[in-house]
Length: 600
Image 1: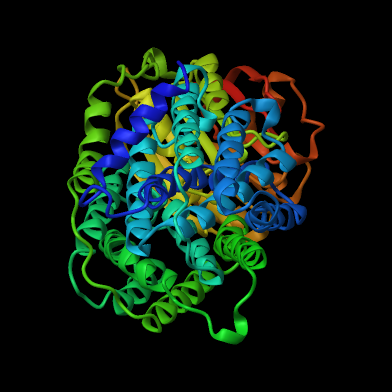
Image 2: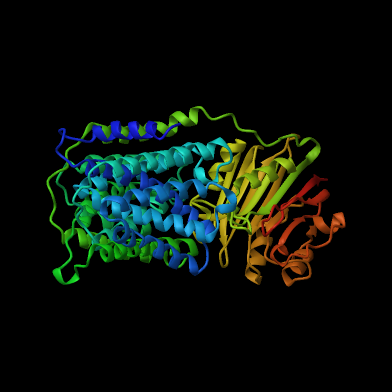
């Protein structure tokens, strides 16, 4: 495909946004489209950085790279700085599609450059309202794209499912860069207040605009959560044509999303997404006092670095579980106060193209879902009271090399041929797992019944998957950051099998809770990351309660990996084990354990 093709398409799309021919400078008409595409790439890179760019050095590198807009303007001038930055972002987006390139320097550079492009693009817009509307559309497109990809970002998809979106985004950026290079530059306005883009980007990509996070928070299906997100984005686009007190709505809506029970999360998220574009329009138009005015290169460098820092102030606490709600509330009230201090412009006209795009976002995920291939179900051949069990602490589906690899989890399940699969440390919208909802992804791939036990946070927990009829299920938390699920399934011969799984931390209280869940059932099995290996006080308590280990029965011995010492399969009095084995871990901290369970 030649460069001319994306350029012609870009010019045609840009033409749809003009109210009258010639009313806006060409670059100012192109800038909202660039804002939307750059925001879509930035949201994806933000989630990628939560997996690949770990450690204290990553935030510093991101902020330094986000300041690149200032040096580019000083070096190349206002007209050429933005096309150069956009071209670099197109190359960076293609580069991170390669697994070996998803390392700290590359990911930090790509995310920082995305912030710099956003600052330059919004600055080039003739009206901050158009930029805010483009951000809202990008958030809706991001949610729709993730729903179409089973809540897995294209950057983690293998083959055409990953490379096709990457190529389309890179071509769109390249076409926009070429248009900007050939067209006369608008007279840009704005400076340090553009740093207010940072926190909303994190709200869009990791919180209220994330279907996987919302699904876990509200305990609704991923499709339902996606509809709430798309409806909020559509309402935000539509509400920019009205006068309403959006700044007074944004902070309480985000507070309700963070603080209230799960049932309130969906309407609170939709309300926050509806208010955010109008709030951003006013906040980005804020004029700093005269004493704070800087020369454009310094102004843009400070805006980019501060915007990246504002985003990371929301993203990093989410990734590490350190009082994330507090940082969300601080940034939400700060953004609302900034918007109250800025004059509100007239209602923004509703051009045909943005509203049409917003409506299309609502229709895309259901249509794509109807085209998905049928799932490969788990086996259900349990005649004679025999079933196959797989247990694995999947470590948030992130391997030791920093790769998010849900496909490895699916491969292990299929290799084991298990009737019942129990997984620990399963992510559901975690920033440190690329926003993936592994529960929804696996349940859809396997067509299985899922029983979910959240840990200290709704976005992480223990999961049971099975194709067998589930006749009873109980879930609870455990001391520390543990979680427990107890299920009863009906086997092919009509017998009922009880399975207890947990991700536990060592301790007497934990041991008592696990043994209480097993109860007096002679056919019960206890499996999971139990927090204590053979010879520990907890293991001796289990032996004293009449439980015996599958490893000992198979003569396999204990693992020598300290991280996986607590991975155990224990059976009650009338349970026997066979065909015990550790499957290939493929770089994960823990290895999957597979065993055949016989009920006498």
